Image 1: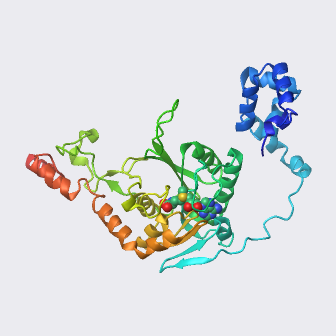
Image 2: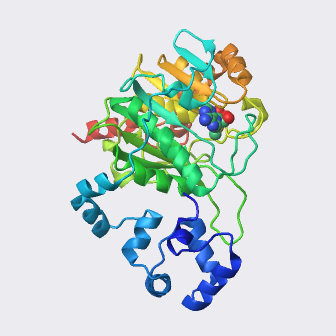
Amino acid sequence: MKNQFFKALHLKATDRGELLRFSRKSSVPADRLIYYDRHNILPAGKDLQKICGTAGISQTQLMLAIGIFDDRLRTLLQKNADSIYQSLEQPQDEGTSKLPMPPLVLKTKLGKLYQGDCFSLMQHQDSDSVDLIFADPPFNLNKLYPSNIDDNLRTEQYLGWCKDWLDECIRLLKPGGSFFIWNLPKWNTYLSSYLNQRLTFRHWISVDIKYTLPIKGRLYPSHYALLYYCKGEKPAAFHPDRLPMDICPHCMGDLKDYGGYKDKMNPDGVNLTDVWLDIPPVRHRKYKKRNGSNELSVKLLDRIIEMASDEGDLVFDPFGGSGTTYAVAEIKRRKWLGIEIGPVEDILVRFEHIHEDADYIAKIRKDINCLFTKDDLKRRIENGWWTPDSVREKNRKKI
Ligand SMILES: C[S@@+](CC[C@H](N)C(=O)[O-])C[C@H]1O[C@@H](n2cnc3c(N)ncnc32)[C@H](O)[C@@H]1O
């Protein structure tokens, strides 16, 4: 809810004079009061004392009004849960009316694509029915989408909307199902703390892709946050790819010594970490499936779907965009369910040319789950570097 901080201090958000009087009385600068209100932040230290003193309220009252609970307040609420529940206004009969089912616009051997609001589709799906969910929502960066959705919501509105679709996704996920959320680190800090109370945290994966130009007074944003959760204690599917070793592209020599144990290196490649440096941005027109931004790399979805699902599983993505998730799911023989609120023509065209994505996936997969790609191995031998075979041969001779 908006302006809860001002409401707690009995201030009208629109009355500048009232705000200035409060600021003078409390000796807390007006712009700092506006900052607390706009971002719904709990003041600390002297500000907290002065604000509560001037408004004549306790810290607990302020926390209740702005909806921020520390452990002490949470324990107090838990202790008094019954009496608090009795005093609450009960919500009107919720959840009986459903949005109408959106129109089906594409049916393939394995999947179905609908056009409309993701809530209208999710409401008609059974609980515990999906094996893997990947969600790449709008980032609330005031971008113009082909669907003309409002991408400039107030923080609480955007987070409230996110929590609503997160709730639906959690309901749809099977026990053991995996849930990935792609967003800016700023938003995923909030979504992560919400999800921590509902699912099991697996990883915060940093995917190194620069997504904006450098911003004055800030570090250069260089990674997206990919949250990875599962429903219940353990994921039903988990088979991460292994990647080739880092080597110098010029001389083909080792760039890291991986502990110096060449003979212990797994010939299938090195373990996938939670920092992904090899996901390309989709910038070049030739590789883009739709004009405008926000299309994700097929390589990213290939890795996620491979890691967290099996053939025949059902994959759901509530934010279709150019249909990357659906195309990759189809190619990898997963069932899929999709929806896009805006135009879907790009997805339809993509499926007509799905062999392009399939060829790309085949190319990517040729160069993973090995210690060196075929080409690199050949060049390493030419340049006299060790290979798994040469290490094995050397060890054999030692015996
Ligand atoms: C960031 S893009 C997704 C891009 C996609 N991952 C890809 O690789 O092409 C987000 C998409 O969600 C769509 N969208 C926004 N709100 C929606 C809603 N309520 N229901 C369904 N789609 C929505 C937007 O129109 C936009 O195309």
